[in-house]
Image (tube, rainbow, N blue to C red; front, side, top):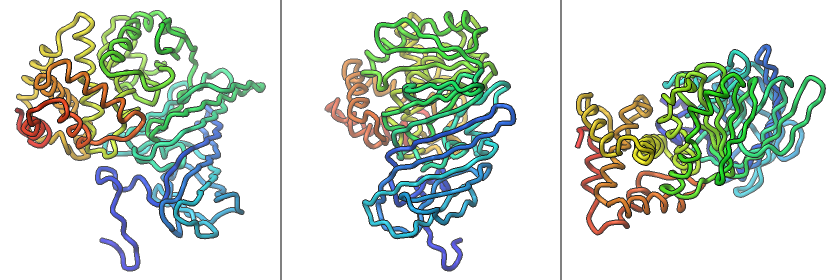
Amino acid sequence: MVKPGKFYEEPLDSYLPHVGNRGYRVSRYELDLTYKVAGNRLSGKASITAATTEIRAKFAFDLSQSLSVSKVSVNGARPAKYTHQHGKLTITPAHAIPAGGALSVTVQYAGTPKPIRSLWGEVGWEELTEGALVASQPNGAASWFPCDDHPRSKASYQISITTDSPYYALANGALVRKQVRASHTTWVYEQTEPMASYLATIQIGHYERRHADHDGVPMHAVLPPRLRTAFEHDFGRQPQMMETFVRLFGPYPFADYTVVVTDDELEIPIEAQGISVFGANHCDGRRSAERLVAHELAHQWFGNSLTLGSWRDIWLHEGFACYAEWLWSENSGGPSAQEIATQAHRNLTGLPYDVLLGDPGPELMFDDRVYKRGALTLHALRTALGDEAFFDLLRQWTAKHRHGTVSTEEFTDLAAHYTDRSLRPLWDAWLFQKAMP
């Protein structure tokens, strides 16, 4: 119920109704951060460049209450009025800004960063035994910087992180500057390709950086020295994996690819733009996590370059990445996609039919059945189109929407160009009915 006198706005996304903001479009974030590992203390200055989309008296950004704001300025003017309540930093400019006008906001803040509690567990900034990591999907970016935390809000980033010198600090993009001053080191990264806020990350630990020999896309590893031998075995087929996915999906969408392995164990790997993060438990010397290595690499195309515009379309990320696991198996001497699909279909047939793939709802959007049924949908499409048309479609899909946002409707519309037959029965059965086709 809306209180009298309160202006109500429809949420940008019904799955995450309190996240994301209206009235502006961010083009760039510049984050100047200092982090003390002992004590888990973060201080920062965020400079946000945006353009207004309408005239508004106030503008809001998502920011966790575990961080305290000390100063805000708008368009270089003297400190602006602001409130910080319920995860929203609401700023009142001194003067009205016309639609299409420049909105340059600087926020100084500090605090003890904590993960944000959500339906899907805790997301965002997380302490490690020695260091920290960021895993923000779907709404954890506000745990460490003020942002428009919606996947449609893509921007370029400069991330500067100063931390204690024994630690290695990694963020998205290219390392453009590193400066050592006594007991502290500053690392400055530039991410030029547009990036959704939940894909922005920082990884800090006692790591070494290694380059993987590969003639194509530059590939790097950031990991504890003790895991080097196991990593070289477990991740040793990544260059062939990259070549396979480039052939099937089209050009790799970023300048390079980095895998981080933490010294701690992680329940699941983590995706970020240009980066995948694994736990020490995923590096056991037996390649037991290789399907996850394929899954996270595939997210660079499906999730990071092509990002959903609405969380109900999560199958466009997870179904595609899951199917990439099957394709890697098929192309590396393992079971074929058809064999894996047959088993996956058999397994799903024995589970409750309560997931609607095209709109699973927030509680189930990360359910394993979404992943597997999404992959089965793609295999059904591949069977209907044939291999040549199916992989032409995937390459066209990644090229047409490179670094953009996508929807299920856009994918089904594009697929229609690759056959003379109607695909509507296929989509209805797999996406919009709960029963297993």
